[in-house]
Length: 408
Image (cartoon, rainbow, N blue to C red; front, side, top):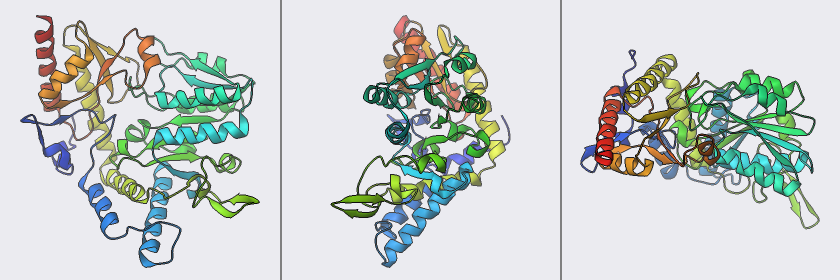
């Protein structure tokens, strides 16, 4: 490990101080949703108690204050991911909503019968189902790039699938099951060489990797706040302005219009064209607070600590007889998925829960990938920088006990 002090960091997260079934909580499910630091909780409370008013609609003090904070949050996100303009930052309810927005609006503008959308075998359902729905509406075809037995995306196969009818390539920055970091910059270059834009699902990438959308060159990048220590119900779709300008709105309603009459409607400029209805301004400000918190940490040390903890998790779990991990390829982050011979994942997770250990189990919103590896479900451990080696040791010992309880 390094000098990063996880004990001090843990004090910032009230949820980690509690007990579950009389045991200290060991929270190892941050890939699903991360716990929130006190500064985020305080920001949300302050928004509710001091500056709660609808944005972009009124001239009274609270509305002006709230609108200013909402737009400051947009600028914070722009700076955090190095977007060219705040107009390229669309607030959504999360990665799922961001991808659905893109599937509808991009699809309406550029996808027709006989066209193709390219995804990979390791995608989250949120980066599969919206594209299936688009293809069904438009008579298009969904193409799938494979992964090998180590979980590595086969970039040669992906490149071979990009053809004249490919309209968009959709790929996860980091797999939510395998933890493998995909070569997204290389994929963007491959696609752009053929004139095809790229969406990156950054739900995991935004947490574990510095994100510079201009350096990556991607055309769209989607992520959720709740995995980045922010509140639930807030997320972002980044899109290059030249695409967003040509895409029709996803939803209609207040705040996304310039003028409405029964003869027709003209739409607001970016980014409001895609933000119909009352915005989640409180969530957006909470996201900005979470980004501020992340930026207050020594980034290099935090990353080294998290990576070292992930490596330690792999080493400790490897010592358990009958335990099989998935995703051996590198580079890899702190998402570790596995099965234990003869032990149903749900049984294991239920027993671990009674010991105060929270992990994820099931198909992990990636059923096609489960079938690729010949399993119905997996167990997933996803430590964050607020976890400790001692917690991993406790997990390992508990898994050993689970195995003995069920198999002997």
